[in-house]
Length: 200
Image (cartoon, rainbow, N blue to C red):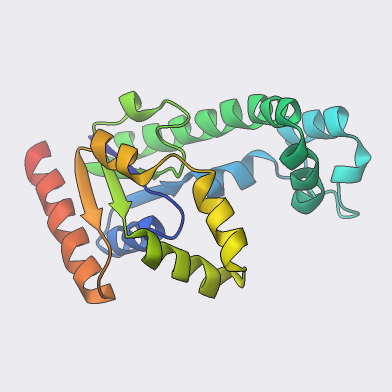
């Protein structure tokens, strides 16, 4: 089984590629989905977060108040490191269990959709790294339109990430997403076929 690491900076289009691959029958797991599952009510990770950050980060229904937690870690790098120390190992455990289930089921190819693939140092755990990228101006417009942010806010989000050029340099395959949805669908299918052929 080949494991594909699918990554790219904000608004580049990696989630669109992930959805196109899902429709083509590929099992795709999202790091964001796993991070949400890792801190569901009743989990050990959520209990540790409450212990560390206090009851103010827990909603009345027992779920994590992401906004409250974000406000704490946004201003405090050490707090962010503590949070990552709780959540990342749990995400890794869930992802490994998911991957082994797919392996046991005989899947040829699976994909991990991970925005911080390089930043968390897990590129060596996948067989092929696919980076989705788009020009800065295109990504900026997409963030402003989809999230209702100001240009300054959108630029701040983009600047906080690893430069796209560095991600392209470290990729095995780059998907350029500067054009239409149809062009992206065509390129995503081409890349998937290339990965499946290489596996066989």
